Length: 460
Ligand code: NOJ
Image 1 (cartoon, helix red, strand yellow):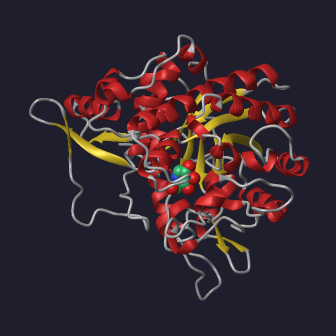
Image 2 (tube, helix red, strand yellow):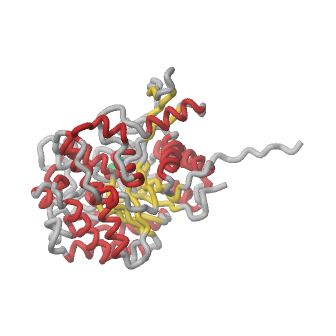
Image 3 (tube, helix red, strand yellow):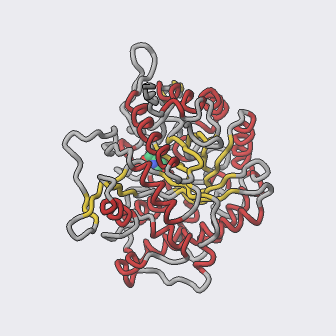
């Protein structure tokens, strides 16, 4: 059987990674505009100043999406494009860009899924303390209201934060993403707590102001440990590893999702972070734990695990020669079975795969085409495992391939190409890769084309 009847086939991108027009039409600076100017911060000093110039070429890009047959497109809004100071005065031109983009998508019969924050934080608010400021969650709620007022007559699907693990962890603790801070855990966890409050207040704001009934979720990283066999002991070990801490890190499912679904931080994380855990206000967890309509999750890879002698999870090293992407991420299709399955079991909320894909070493071949068999193979394998999860009862509502276009891959600049569509940056020419044409058939057949052919049992 193909995928469920209403399964949503989409692709995704994010404002800073594709829009460009970084200093046009009144847009304010984001922390990424600033971070890219710091020596050594981004590969070869690349910036998102121009990126894919999507701000000017969005109509062509929507036409490419339509050609592929996308049913949905996950975009994000640049907060400082709309509110140059992060709060206060609205930049009408910035807001109008999203207004036009949404109209273009709807005219092409592509459903917009809007992420409110995909990392391009207003620099003006950063100067006031950013995510460490006690009012930071209110700033985000105010920004949410501006967007919802303008777009919710046409937009129904909302995500608050993209990958808090990254913008808090990589941005405030590891220092390799904007704003490039290496704070102590106390401050890092405070920033994380404020981001959770921002999420909760944003959900409240969406539900209070939306003009059409909204469907609301978020889009964290899915850190997935998968069992190397189907034995109950290995499965239990993988489940445990997926939902537990073994070191101080924000790359955790539970640190962000448990407060949202269970009104509490995970006990093993609390024990590990000890005195660095922020003070949780009396009403904080009620604000954070707003009911969600879906659990969006970005999954690219997983970690193989088995049950050790004591039953506890043991990481199993990859074999020599295990497949890797251009980014040197191991290819582990099992993650798209076990990730959604574990998350659905624990949080009991319908899942969307809000990102999955791979970077590949793509170029334009002598025949003028871009051949990317690895991406087709990677996605085929991941869609097969996702399909198996659905067959086993996991409520997965849709799949968004990352990404529609090659784009600015944060600290890696334009080195990593994740797109279904190749972007020749000097000319801004778009060339749909083989995978884009392949994805067209996947969508057309509602996923049937990726499933293994059924071998008919001969009638005796
Ligand atoms: C996660 C992020 O949300 C996205 O911005 C990034 O480009 C992809 N993963 C690939 O690393």
